[in-house]
Image (cartoon, rainbow, N blue to C red; front, side, top):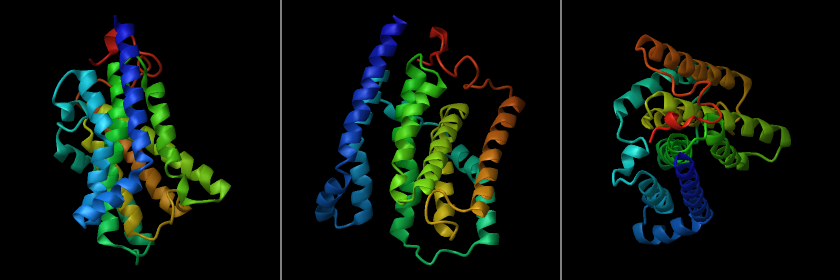
Length: 265
């Protein structure tokens, strides 16, 4: 029975995400059409993201057999927890930016909103809340197979930033590891999607506010502070769970293939 459930949910996740991804290929076309209606670029941008996400919402509803899809995507948990943890995690990036870099001269409000809060929210919602979350919680797949495909697609989506092969490898590696980190934070903070949403948002905000690099790869100094942010996020999360006697969601029993009784739903 559990095996049948895993196969069924795998198919639903796959079909839903494929439909989303195909719609995403027409993102610009849909947004242009909406621009003619709203006459507000940022509103059209948000609306387009939600429209192409309809297959994701339908898939979540089918898998969980519940109308409260926000809960199963991780959005019903504490937003405040997401804000304060993410502010703590990303403190090194903002401190490093203020000390070592100048403020960017190319900051536009709409671009800033689109590249931080909207990008952070939508990417985490679709990639971590759905693609990773539904696979990890509703199938026997462990953490590594659940995150691999999403991290691969997520990282590939950032390769437009450069044409240099070495830099492309660096960008892919950095964004792939970022996807793994966000998924791990999502799981370990009780499937609270606001934690990776705001961590992603604040990291992007720091990158856009300061002249620390033109791509997701960045320079040596910028990456030192990014590494500190990652280290704090991991170490604080581990320490917090140990102090509160909370079990770890990602462990040797849930890395590759979970036993039937390890499934969340």
